[in-house]
Length: 141
Image (tube, rainbow, N blue to C red):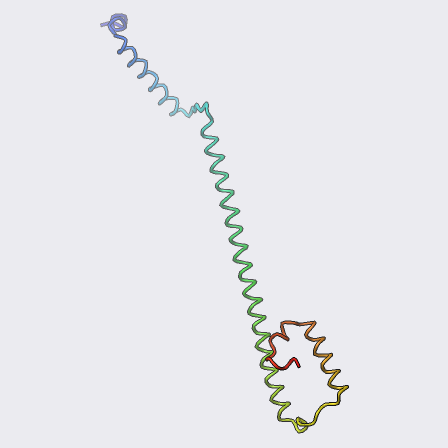
């Protein structure tokens, strides 16, 4: 059977199958060679979406890193503040104990001297309110 007889013997369904076979083989061969046909630019859209997701993930990771660093810094400040408060409380307790055991503990202070001490105490409280807040109640007077 020659090619002319074969071409005349094909029905419309046979022609459709032959054309489809040629198209499939052409696409497979062109893909194998590296040709790409993307009229809707779907590959570029997928790439842009992936890049946007990667950028968003980098920003989120950076934000989480900053949150962790800020939390650690806050913990260090809180620890330092706590140590200061404990030191103030210990010093105050020692001073009160020493003042109560002093020989002149029962002698009242001169009014001028007591006023100067109160003014000095107020000035210290203005400079470091956290320290005054750490003092045991009843010492402010």
